Amino acid sequence: MSRVGKKPIKVPSGIKVTISDDHLEVESNKTKLTALIPSGIRFELSGDTLTAVRSSDEKPYPAYHGLARALAANCIRGVAEGFSKQLDLVGIGYKVDAKPKAMTLSLGYSHPIEFPLPQGITAKVEKQTKAIQNYIATITISGADKQLVGQVAADIRSLRRPDAYKGKGLRYSSETVRLKVGKKGA
Image 1: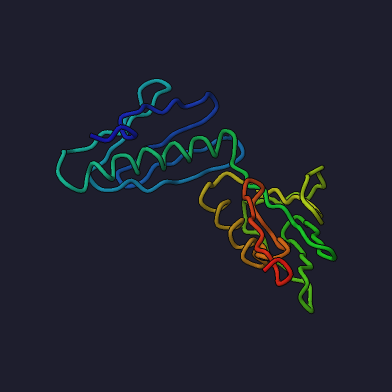
Image 2: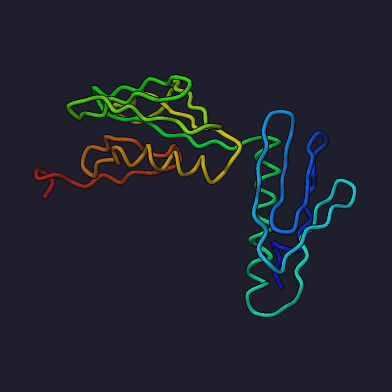
């Protein structure tokens, strides 16, 4: 039995949930998200509680049960609160500038990189106090869709991954970069 699939989802006030045969729509006054429902799984809304129910205990359905419930819970949380990821920019001479629909990054290449932001994603650049050597700024990527926020953060990080010797590049704020010893340490 799926333990995740059995958990009920609390729907906050002000959020409207519409259940169809193959998808679930969650909307508030600001945003609207859609989650696909795998076959063999259905949702029931009673009051302010949403539950996922599977049609049988045969082989693929228990796995889909937890998946469908997690996708629905992510949609509800995304519409209610939103998701965010933070990236730290480390390196002398590196710069970042956030505009409403794009970001301009100078990452040590011969040209600045113009990174377009998808619809529904916002980026904010701020300087915090961190104990990282050559720290420049923190980029906060936020939006309602958890998958899209994570993908945009991964795409930005892939522009300049952290260097193994000096630690320069883009890294997640929760990421720990272990530096290798150079020639003089060997």
